[in-house]
Image (cartoon, rainbow, N blue to C red; front, side, top):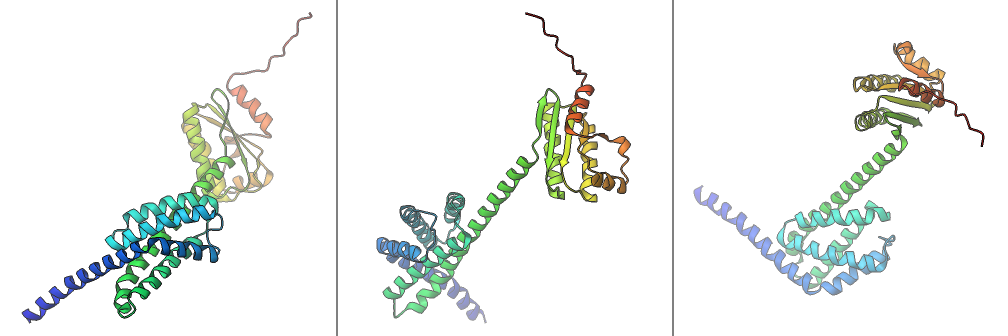
Length: 294
């Protein structure tokens, strides 16, 4: 029994060493034929109509970098450098409109081009070559695809965040007076972001009065209406009075249905009236200017 365990414990490291050595040999062959294989890969990318948003020169430049990183990952088994390159590549090409299937497609094409070259080099022993090459190649393809998808999702989140911020701007009108014009549908996520932006604006501008205009909000469900009330209360805790303008009958009914006492909310019919009320709360008043005769 002891002899059997010893034999098994030796076989595994030997198999690993054999695979590692074989991969180094394969990489040496692929590096030696780098120019030819890289050109063939770039040609097949063009034939497959992938990366069409990029120029042929850009495709060839990226193909060169991907090829070298691919071989390094094959040889060392380490994908850290490839992951970094994949993220950087994604940052460059996603804004150009490159899709996920294109990135996956070019990596699979490279895997196929290299496999065909290895078959031509080792036809009699290709089964053993494939056993060493294919798992490593699949891991690399998965790494690049996952990296691209993650970067794409990150960029989409950033774009969504920017759109939300543009859709709910907190505008300083004068010292310690803010206006928050809200347009469009408010869902729970946007309501939370609205609250965060407003409270941040109150703190940064040391605002005492906020005019929240919801004239452009067509409807509001009970969850969002309740969040609106909480936003008004949170603003009050920071020392700011919120004046709500443009309240539609439908939204007013929603607020009543959830038990909000509208008498405790400072509401004004329209934005102009809200600004006048805000100025009154701040101690401003309109004084007519008398023009002296020339």
